[in-house]
Image (cartoon, rainbow, N blue to C red):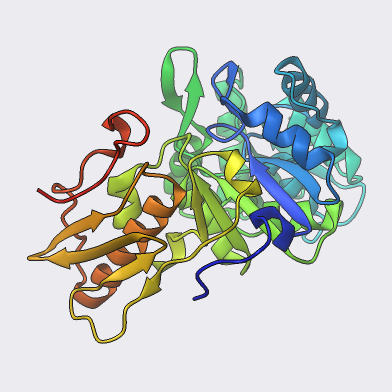
Length: 350
């Protein structure tokens, strides 16, 4: 792979698709530096989309929340898994037909926008079932919807996320309901949200662009979703993914790029180079080198552990994983999160 390019990372793409939680905000607060980076994106020629697996909020509400965080956004910039689920249903049922709704008013609005009729009564003769995260949904509706699924109606789920962030920590997400209905009905739904293709495909349909970049913080949704449709991805380290998850990632969960945060979009992209003839999985990136000794990953180089350090470590770890089938030992690497002052942050094996 090439080592460097004269352009900024963002210049290689005409659409940037940003995941929200862990990338743009964490809980009620914006990720530090996210607002500045997004304003820079907005002022460029690159299209920008905010992409979320959450089907419980309308694009208007999502855009309003982003605006409150000093992040410029319009409803047309936002694409939800509810919208992707509604679009998927149009390939299964005719316009104007009733669809049994196990979800929020936002999901109902998404159905109406594509010409389908949300209902919550079996007497309306629904021809399909759609489900999404809705914390106030009644058990009676869940039972009725599950029976319809068991009886063979097409079923589309907005996502299968097992957890959802709340003010009290992670709580059960829509994926828990999906598992329950699937076990009862002995059927699996068609899924619209990441990592399945429909959500990112819907984003590209709405926003345009032929060379998109998916930006996320989760390997098993954001990065895998990009891999599923064959587009590049950027992992930012402001969310849930850390060193342990990164080095153990199989090919379908490996990002094209890794940066600390959204500011990396405006840096010169770099890729590690495998040194030919080396039996220790040695790679070089700039003045950094990494290799494996006795199953342990080692790295050394000058200065601060920046994006290059993460790219290098990932490349060495994945080379070792592909060759041996086992994750590399990272215990001899200094924890990147507990580094000393800038300028004294070498990562040299003891």
